[in-house]
Length: 104
Image (tube, rainbow, N blue to C red; front, side, top):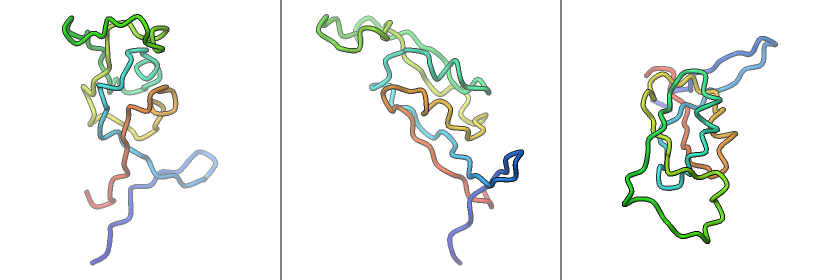
């Protein structure tokens, strides 16, 4: 038996597309800017405060404009609809996505 085809969607205009569901978020790369949290239509993400020991107090960090001692975590990954909005707005490429097979 071959590889199962992925779940596909269809746009209002009739174009087929393959949803790419979030499977991981690299919290160590996340700067806590909240962009992904704001664009997610399904509340898949939660903002978490870093422990004081985890915070890099180096003032030479180039990411200081967005960082605020917090990071995102996947709290409801099973609610993801595969739109990839989070990845499109993430400045640090923290997200990993994959299609799901039709017969899951």
